[in-house]
Length: 112
Ligand SMILES: [Zn+2]
Image (cartoon, rainbow, N blue to C red):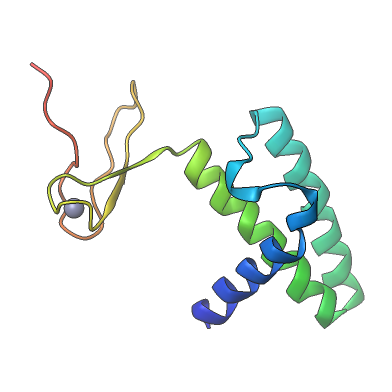
């Protein structure tokens, strides 16, 4: 089921290619929040209306926006502990540091 959804996310990116290069889009927080609210509202209406075709389309749009938030604001780093097989989300100043889902490594070298 996740594979089907991931394919649908790719299909939506392709269908919206005329709007610009999705992969290169580096939104500000305000731009992302606006886009997310817009697409969230469309998905909410589709669900409220029970329109399965639009639910499939708009849920993929929201999925793509979630992935964009992960990539742009989460700033995942490849894990050096498992040679980049996994990713680690590191935020400077955070109390905790996430660990690689694959190897539980921190994915970063300790700064001394
Ligand atoms: Zn790792």
